[in-house]
Length: 325
Ligand SMILES: [Zn+2]
Ligand SMILES: [Zn+2]
Image (cartoon, rainbow, N blue to C red; front, side, top):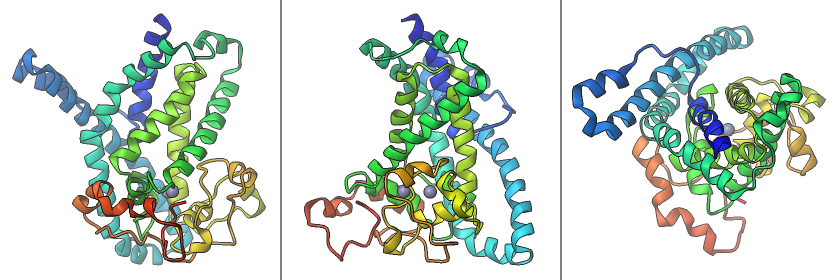
């Protein structure tokens, strides 16, 4: 159980990392606790986690915003501002979904992190003690965490494309003007499956906290990059690393690209498992045919509509015009 206690803070960090990076500017939890008294502890803790997540996400998004603004200007010059104006409504929706997740999902994941850690340790299935990794160079342990994280992420992403999981994952695919902010467009169910599956894999390996957190940071920030509106394909290096064009094809509404490019960092998983598809820069339309409006309500409720699961009960045909497998 001592091992579980060691691992819990690392999983808690892991829960917060996908939406955050940077300094904590304000310690609201303490203030709110003082105002409401201890009997409202769970609520104040929850609100405190939300506030903490919003501040860290806002500060963490600042550097990527400047980075993509600069790189976009270098690549597109004046066309950048036209593109930004066109993407504004979709980007606004991405931010709304991000804030919703920060308020309601991140605290939930943070609270459930300890439970998940204790659960896996109680099963006795954890392969190594975090101490076992101390013999390894830090860089090697981090690299291993990223490789394993990306491999598990590849299969988890394929799982999200099956007809049962698709209605929640479709929210991520519904952005028709993909930018780096599209990484924040995830349905809460999708956030939870990602957290549970990815963190369970790393917990089962008993990887030390620094490797778990490093994996989460690196894959998250590389995720911003592959969602950016950049035409880069990497040429033959696409087999090694996922390029922005490669992931854009994953979001394409062109059925030739359906069921392709599930990896986040290493293109080798798609190459090895036959899902690699990069014919060049992706100029095709993006988005899904699912009946979802570009509003917060419609995006969040789509996964709870029986109609969204209709394809579970019929044979796949040419009439299926979504990337669900
Ligand atoms: Zn997908
Ligand atoms: Zn994506």
